[in-house]
Image 1: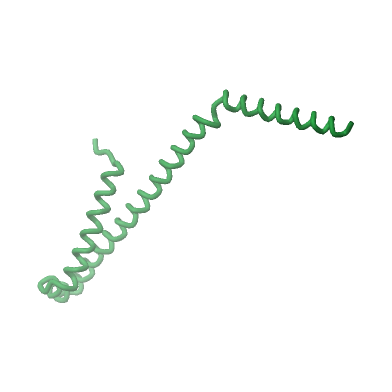
Image 2 (image 1 turned 45 degrees about the vertical axis):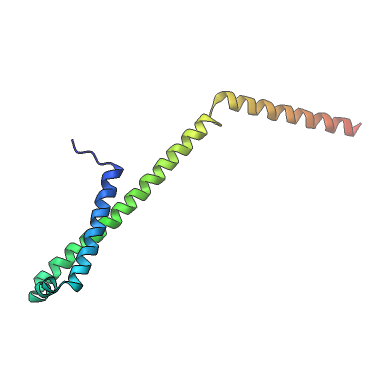
Length: 114
């Protein structure tokens, strides 16, 4: 089955960008393409509609990649949190330390009030 992966949509985005560049260059610089585009208005609109579609596809794929990277980062950050602060033993030790600090502070206040 066809599986969509990050490598595949990056390859598709690269192909779209390369085709856009080639079409833009050919539409302006290559004589026979330029002649063909000017021969009929329909040719002109079809050619640049394909260019525009490829351009939008490249932008969409870039945004998709950006969102995927952000999601990977959020998942990794959550895993790190779960491995450190999220562990029950760590939280218990942290609460015990907080209680000990609170008791020490209260003892100092009691000593200073006498």
